[in-house]
Length: 95
Image 1 (cartoon, rainbow, N blue to C red):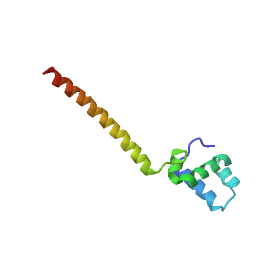
Image 2: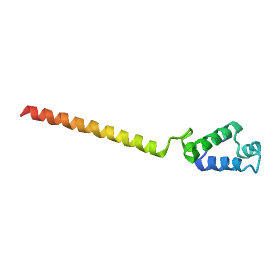
Image 3: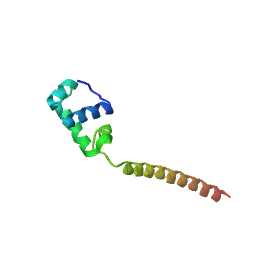
Image 4: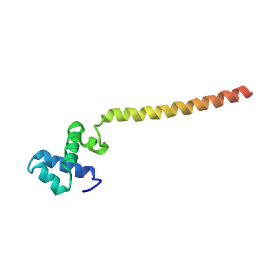
């Protein structure tokens, strides 16, 4: 049984299971995969598609992820500007 599988491999296995050409038991045997793992991947895929398999959990929208990243960048920018402002005020007080 493989410990790690690529996203593409997971996707191919889940899609093969959804096609229904072979039983899930046979598909899992052929790939050395437990049925529990297969059904977990299938659930994630149906809930969130390809990105969910990458994350190993239900996925947030790409827009939400983008906004969270932008929020972190803005927090860093505010912290840098606040530090510069403190330095500026200290320099002004010395004159």
